[in-house]
Image (tube, rainbow, N blue to C red; front, side):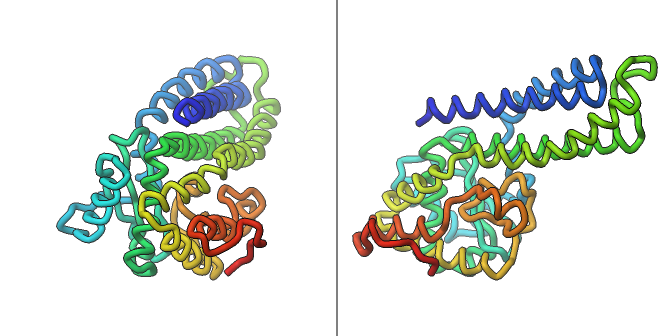
Length: 299
């Protein structure tokens, strides 16, 4: 598992490097290519070491001390012990939309973030199921790949904005006026990047295998010792999401959450999460109260 996640992370970082170089060349010619390559190397290192902090910041998460949320801290600590993990950092997102995610490049650097809304919506057992799911992500060491992907998607958005400004002003951000390939060529390159960058961001998000959510569901059920609280939590979260409420967060971080915080549009076409009804069904099968051959249905 760890070797496979490391391989996927390496591929994503290589893709980011290539994208930086292509965009740099499109909006700045040869000098833009050189500068973009240097920036890509720096961002690759930053994504590897600081992707967890960036994901927390992009999500508006703040660290909470034990005296601020004693019950939440006790729950996280107890479940971490059951999972044989160091206690992760505990973060809170001030939002009425119920959701949660985990991040961290290793178990020793793990962090769990929950919204204020999920703490109000779920009962104690259901919240424990959600936190156990997030701890399973940390235990499986797939939080690094998710955090790096979120960082890359955010960087792609930034690059698209750079290309937009380059096209608006009709000039290169890196090259001189005398350098060949400017003018309309640069404007066309900027336009192409504006179109392709969001698509690339979606593809990178989809590069995170949906199967990791199934794996985390099963792992969380084992940590908690009961699959049903998580199944019940997922049903409540899906029902809330169906109302059309969305989380005020950076779309680049959507694959991190236990359920997709964005609905409709391109997010509905390119799903970053497996179907909730199928996830609930698998958990109920684990509990022995539903047949694996029974058709999935929304509840």
